[in-house]
Length: 195
Image: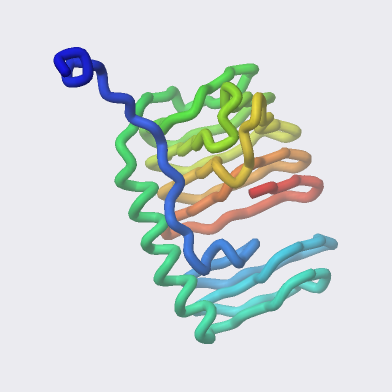
């Protein structure tokens, strides 16, 4: 009994509950969803308060201020609150990538963050490993930067929570679910988002 009580407690990151928001590839609770150029989107698109424009090649349903978007907005708030209140395991410098390898956990980044070159996320053989990045400012990526998943890591278990604009540069390969609080997400040409 003494050994169990005195053993160090482990703090594992837990995926948030996304509810009906998980049915959307792009969703905003307030504001517009827009696209310029040629994009292929697989999944539902929605806004609870705004317009949808320029999304011509969509393999899914477009929802605009209806019951589905009302439910998704409520579920998005729950998911955001869970991501925001997760207890960090690690503090990280604002620069992500440059060949850095991270294990599962919750990473707190004060201020703005940027992704450069390759960032490796290593699940260490656990396909349920969760990676949460709590960014208290904006997130930007350098051109052709990549999030690379290793040893069973899955994009559905990677979460980026920001408090400002997300700007994904051309030819970036971004993996994970992005939740931007009170800000827009901009994805440049040639970029890939898997989440």
